[in-house]
Image 1 (cartoon, one colour):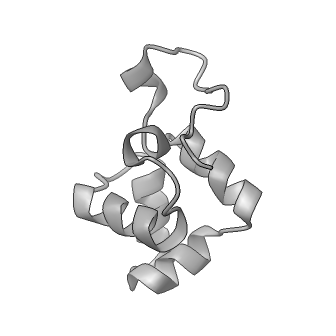
Image 2: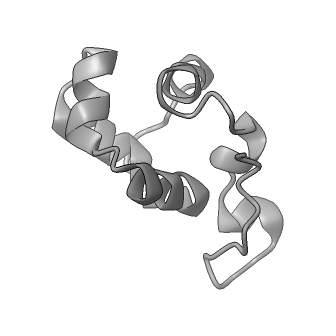
Image 3: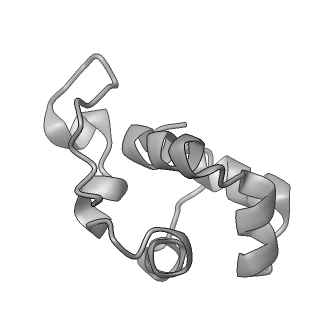
Length: 83
């Protein structure tokens, strides 16, 4: 998954791609492809994910990527902005 903070929060909270896809009314495979960077994840989709599952998280931190942060390791240290 290219959104490492999102992946970490999903794991912490027990949120699966399947449960997210049901709430978003989107095929599981389509959502998986978007979260893995195969297709574009649109802002309105990211906002809905944040509102439904991670309302206490900052959207920029939740959906940041290593390329956005200049971090080639692909990981982040406790930067999700969630409380």
